[in-house]
Length: 113
Length: 113
Image (cartoon, rainbow over all chains, first blue to last red; front, side, top):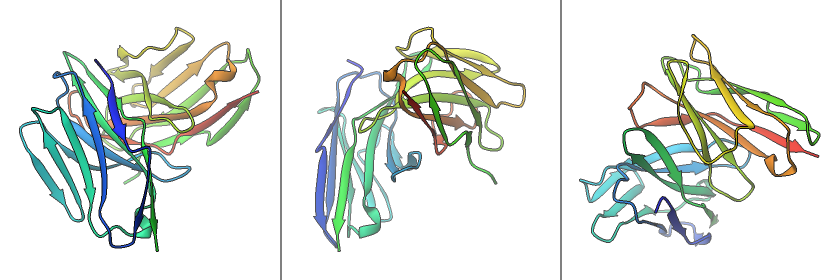
């Protein structure tokens, strides 16, 4: 119930292509859905986030699509660049009186030059 | 404006020993959360501190304890170290309790031999 399932585990995309990472959840108490980007040896960096009352949010080349009825959300990286090669984590905020983040297992993205 | 800082960067300990990790939150942030990230996995929530009190806790044994100081900095203590405690320990801070955006530090890599 508190899991966030992320896929694929790894992804290889050509430069200029679109990278798509998907996440699914079960608990309707999740209230906020951020995506984090993590480079080797670094902590996760907040990339973009969405609330469940919005179906899409775009920031530059990064877009979150959110399907509340299907309990799914995805990250789209347009015009993928080699510098985007990193591990991406989706997360969901469990808001039931207190605040607790549940993270997906991560997607290792490699963008080929 | 300094982001979240953590010390030390790396640490090697022996089974059964005790370890203390330190975190300074982003300037102006008063809420600190700790996460454990095993290799190839997403961060797992350990606990969260606000107003010098532990506000909530993840599924971690009592060997994991923490503290928050009046200047909002925090410590994570792990007693009776096990090999399985080897991981990247991440600290994240939020502007104030209840605000959802959190920012991660670079982490402390703990190796237990």
